[in-house]
Image (tube, rainbow over the protein chains, first blue to last red):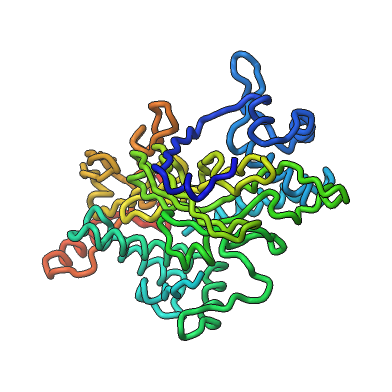
Length: 107
Length: 332
C-alpha cells in the first residue's frame, strides 16, 4: 500500500514488534512475496532454516529468516545470481557481519 | 540535504593522532561524567552523552575512523559537502550501483551527519524501474513490485534495553517517481531484552511498493550505547570491580551496582585478578520469558601507589615475613 503525505501526518502509528515472532510457510509467502517452492528450495540448499520445530512439527520461520529471504531475492533478481553465487555471497555477508560484531565486542 | 560536520575528536577531547587506547580512555571518562544517571543536569547530559557515544562509535572503529578522517579533509569551509563521484545516497552504504529513492533516518539517537555517512543503513530489494529482471519487455506493463527493505541502526541505552522503551522514528524518502520528499513518522516499541546487534522488524515501513505491490519492511539494528559501569554480551551484563589487594587476598563483602538495584557480593579469599564472579539472573531480560541473563563481576585488583611511612613499613614487614613467590609457587 502506498502511503500518501496525508497518511503520514495523521496520528502517529505505534509498532510493537515481537522479537520472538514466528511464521508458517504460508505467512512467509504472504509477507515476502516469495513462492513457497522457492522458499523450500532455499531451505533444502541450507540458505535459510526454520526455527526448531515445535511440538506440532509445523515448519516456522522467524524475522531473521524473513530478512535472509529478502536478501536472497534481492541478490538473485538484481544481480542475476545463480544458486552457487547466492551461497557464496550469503556466506561472505554473514562472515563480514560476524567479524564486525567481533571487532565491536573488543572495544 | 546539507549536514553539519561533526568534530568527533573535539567531542572526545583527543587529538587527531590519538591512539586507540587514548580514545577508549577519553570516552570512558566522559561517559562516566555525562551518563544521565549520574549527571546533575539530566537534559543537557543526555544530549552530551549521545554525542560522546556517536563520536566513539566512529573513532573506535578503525574503518569508520579512516573514512571520517578522509571526509574531514574534503569538507568545505561553509559546511557544505560535495560527495565523491558515484555517491548518490543519503543512506550510507547503499549498494554502489543502487539507485532509486534516497532515504534518511530521524529519531535513532544519531545525528544527521552520522546517519549520512556512518550508519549501517542499507537497502535490500528492488527500486525504481531499473531492477532489470524480466521487466524490460516491450509490453510496457508494470508488474506489482514490493518495495525494498531498509535497514538502519538505533542507539539504545542499557536501561532502555532492560525495561524497553518507545522511540519516535522518522524516515524521509524521495519518491522515485514523483521526486517528492515524503516523511513517514511512527513510533516503535523497543522490547525489553533488545540485545546489541538484534534487528527489530517494522513491517511495511520500508520503501513503498509499485503498481500495487506492498511496501518493504524496516529493520532497526540495536546498538547499545556505552554505559560507564556495565557492558553487555548478549543478555549477560559485565561489571569491572576495583578491589584492594587485601580484599582479594582475605576476601570481602562489597556492595555492587547492577542495572536494577545494588547487590551485596562476597569476594572469596584468594580471588585472582580477572576472575569472574557470576550472579545468576541479574542480566538483561531474555525475550518474553521471565528468564534473564547473568551478571558477571570481573575482579580488578588495584594497588595503592601513595604510601604513608607507616603503610610502607607494614608492606616491608610483610615482604620479610611472606613465603610467597609468584615465580615459583604453582597456581593453587
